[in-house]
Image (cartoon, rainbow, N blue to C red; front, side, top):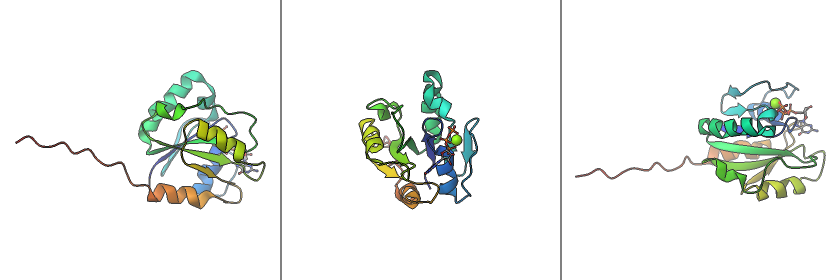
Length: 152
Ligand SMILES: Nc1nc2c(ncn2[C@@H]2O[C@H](COP(=O)(O)OP(=O)(O)OP(=O)(O)O)[C@@H](O)[C@H]2O)c(=O)[nH]1
Ligand SMILES: [Mg+2]
């Protein structure tokens, strides 16, 4: 299973998605610091909302195989600037959360503008869309190792 780092503003639904991905009961729990559990790394929304802490997220991405940028379907704005995915050297996927609350297409467009080529849509409360994220983490092959030619 590839390790996933969840990034998004406070209330975007990162912890709820983490709980749904782990098969736990989804319940509200404010994230107070970086949380490492199994194949998931959960971050507090404040990291994405604060410029200096945002830089720390780039460093945490080294702990992950895949980075997920989350935007809720009913969010009024996106925190993520265009083409931001190049700031990390990991695969970056987009995840639209709370698809039960609004049309997910606007959030999906923001995520694509930020550089996410693959965008998932989930409702963590019902589990809709969650298996597709799990499948992506299972199926995704690890990057090919660069093997240097041995000198003769
Ligand atoms: N309707 C609906 N509500 C959701 C969904 N996902 C999360 N929520 C609710 O959104 C609120 C915030 O969710 P969290 O998962 O705590 O958000 P977070 O991104 O972890 O927030 P921080 O820990 O503050 O960074 C909670 O009340 C959740 O129940 C969803 O898919 N649908
Ligand atoms: Mg949280």
